[in-house]
Image (cartoon, rainbow, N blue to C red; front, side):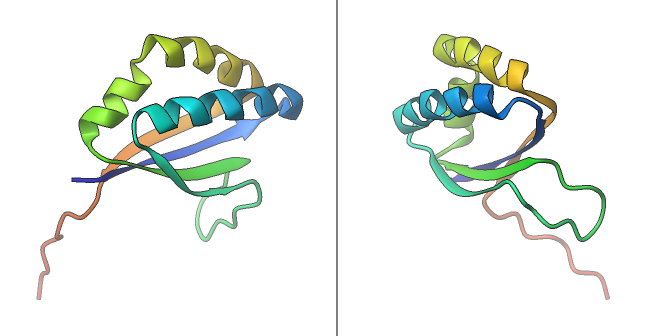
Length: 102
């Protein structure tokens, strides 16, 4: 079942961040992931939006964890950590029915 990785973080060095993106794209392709949305100007209805917000679809939870734990990503992540702060990465199931209460 497909799952979604929701990323949000603040970018404080855009030039360094630009170097991260093509490296990440190659790794996402390796794991069958697809960026569905990314935005540098998100609008928050509640709370405070971060500089970068993205939704990435992976074919499975295993693919998300394999990608994140890939030694190649360990190296790529170093460039993101230098360019960003306050990172949140959340794995969300494709669909889990919520109970309805009357």
